[in-house]
Length: 83
Image (cartoon, rainbow, N blue to C red; front, top):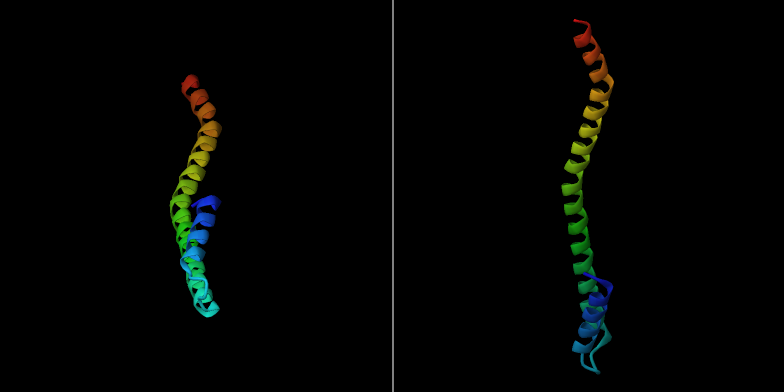
């Protein structure tokens, strides 16, 4: 969700309260909305970590394989040419 959408949601939430609404009700409702957004953010962070971790592992392993081949391929070619 973008900042504009968050602002629009907040405006809609505040507009839903009547003028004479007790502040406790408004405070409780806004606190609930804050907890909801906080939980959504936590879920997004966890899902991002779940998808990013395997990609990092594959990338590091790919880099190790490239370095290994770069080190040993010339030696293998030289040994093959000597035979």
